[in-house]
Image (cartoon, rainbow, N blue to C red; front, side, top):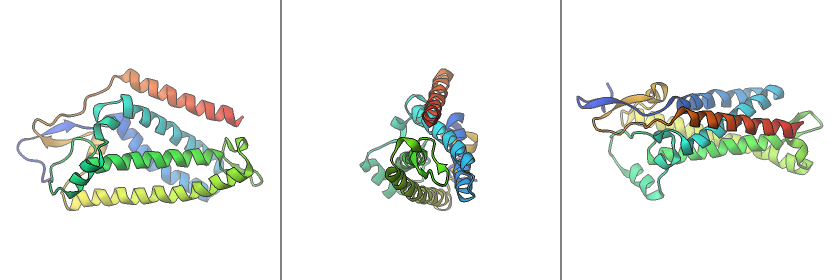
Length: 223
């Protein structure tokens, strides 16, 4: 049993399904992008990259208009709060991302957005492996973006390793199971904890439409 699960704990809703679906989609798409690049499946690589971009658009917009625990304003804290959290020996679970985790979310989203953007312009026309917007930049710029595309991938890998290490640390040291809540959307929390406040569905629909439009603009630019 989780050490946080006491007699006064009640199962509390923390994560909405858009956050959870996007989270696990990232976990599936990043290995798929690596595999397609390594095996020369550039058509699939570009298509998967476009899907990743659209999910990023939804997640960023949802970070402003989504449910309470999905909003950046709900979990992004200043350096003081991050240091206090890291120094704290408290084992109480956080209703959402903790201060350190909040910044890791921003870093991961930023790196993925940079990676996708570089990928759209990267490539070498001579071997046919180009992003959909490669023709909009010079060969020198495209070459530089291709190089950076590879570098940013390793930064993303580093963030993934850090993320997994944090999960193991919380499980082994704080006896805090983080994965389960991202699967089910809820977890036992101390009585009186404020859970997630849901956002109306129309906001999610608006985010999805915006993401589709961004993808459409990219492919129009590729034509």
